[in-house]
Length: 334
Picture 1 (cartoon, rainbow, N blue to C red):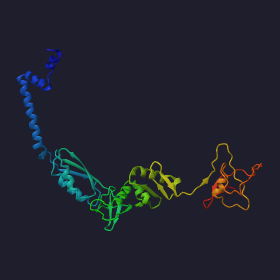
Picture 2 (picture 1 turned 45 degrees about the vertical axis):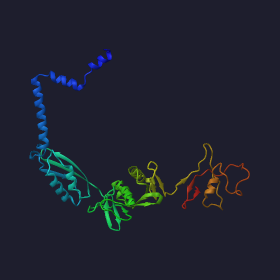
Picture 3 (picture 1 turned 60 degrees about the vertical axis):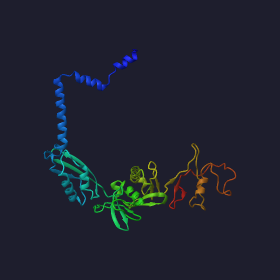
Picture 4 (picture 1 turned 30 degrees about the horizontal axis):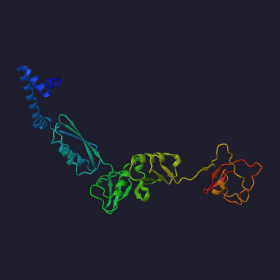
């Protein structure tokens, strides 16, 4: 017999090792182990078939919190009735969900047994994000498109237009669904300022503010980042008076419609930039082409007006920055 065969015979499986260990136990210890096993089985069976549904742990008090809608009293009553048919060791969450299935304002239930006779139910409600407007009328909707019929609306909400059928429990129009998502993603303080959310050509979804610029969102994605960028821009005093804020790239929002303030010619370092003195005959606004001719290395736009030979005399007037005139054109500062 070689060494490999001897090593294989010496190897014992875990089951065989356990059987050998049991055989080595004394009869008295074996009886105790068997009694303990039987007791565990009896207790487990008693828990499943008697104790967890026993009146010893029956629910007697149901505490319902978080309900603020007009159906609050009926929701509490439905949950209380369903909860008192349970025990703290056997809470049927599906039965609780069925009890409030007819109330669209209920988003979810957070249930916590309070041993031995209590049950705490926290109702998490949908919050209206917009008013869906269709041929069937106006109805509040949540940010995910859930239709909230009968839910009381507090304050001002943006409107979204529904094209076609409204739907029963959920918006079916994809355009209105995206607009509701944009409205639902807005911070509460900004949502009250939104007049409506529309889908407009290449701009995608656009939120029109009552006292501010249009917010261009593009597709209804990255809404949290886009609304954060919008809040930053609207809080910036320099952005006041803008006609729109483009949020399609939330890391780089673009502000449009602001009037230009100061135009300073750009020249290489060490180069003096001067503006020729204006004559009495052409003291009007300087056109873009004229302003361009004042910058070094730019070609003159009028060949007749361009000097043919460099002047040897130094300029008689110091350099002046270009500022914006009342009409939006660039003029030389006096």
